[in-house]
Length: 222
Image (cartoon, rainbow, N blue to C red; front, side, top):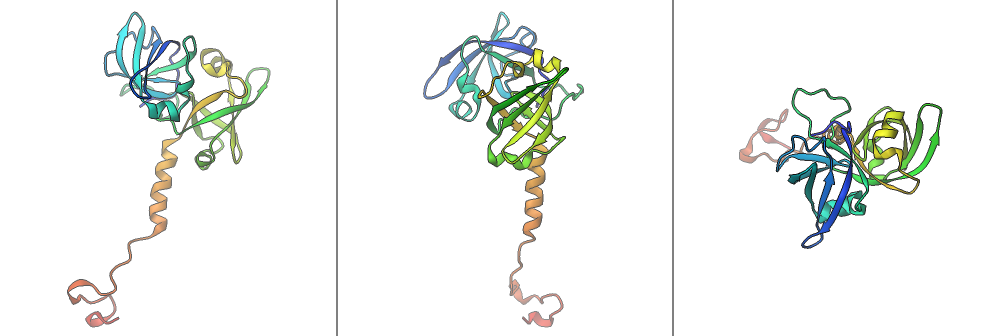
C-alpha cells in the first residue's frame, strides 16, 4: 500500500528483456534504496514492483508482460525519470490517499495551462474509468496522489503546484505522453457493494423443500 506522495525522482538505468514478454528494470534511487531489501515493494510511476536486488543506490525489479501491456512502463527507456515511493509503514502519516500501486489504465496528457503559481493539466482517460472519477475526489497519476479539479466524459483535470511540477515527472510530461492511472479503490468497492444490493436478494424457491409453509400461506399453498 502507498500514499501517492513521491519520495524521490529516480532514473531508469537499463531495461533488459527477459524470457517471454517480461523485462528486468534497473532504477537508480538512493533514497528509496537506503533501507530496501529483497522482496520489498517500491512504486515506479505508480506501479508496485518487487525489489529483486539492491546495489549502490540502484534496485532491479521484474516486470511481467501483463504489467508492460497494461501500464506505461512498457515505454520506459534508460535515462527516463520515474516517480518513486516506498510502501507505506503502519503508523506513518497518510499525506495523499490509499494507493494500491495497481494501475487501472493508461491515460494521456491532452492540455497544459500554465498560471502564475500553478499549472492546470488535463488528461484523457479510458471510458471504463470515467465513472470512478469525481470532482474533488482523488486519483493517482504516475504514482502522484492528486485532487480532481474538473471532470468530463473522457477527461479530467488537476492543478499542479510548483513542488509537484519540480519534484515529479508530471512537470515534464508533454501533450500526447502516456501516464499511469489508478482510480480511488474506495469507489470500486462502493460500486460492487451497491451493485449487489440493487440486484436484490436471491429469489426463494416457489415450493420450499420438505413442504415447509410459505409465509402467510398455510400448508405451503401457492
